[in-house]
Length: 101
Image (spheres, helix red, strand yellow):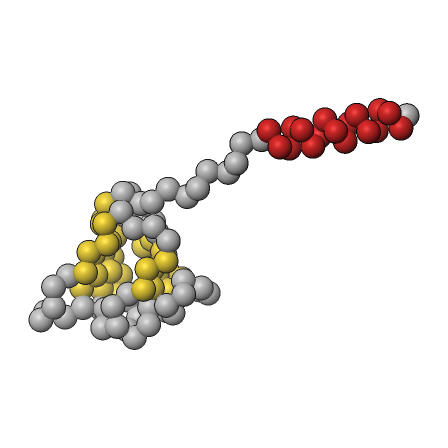
């Protein structure tokens, strides 16, 4: 009985080691475009991935990627967020917002 148990544990550990690693999240394809003021050029994030801090005076975020984007009210991409679907936009919090793709 003990030999069977040892064999099962050994087989399970080998199978666990042979399992493929989880795939890393893929970056969104396209651009996230942020409008701040009429006097400033647009901020363009090409193929964004991970957490991106928004400009201090950001006003509107436009998601032109192929994936949803999360908009946060802090610079760390933590806590409650608003989902912006591809081809859509939203007003963003001023001061210290961020987004993740």
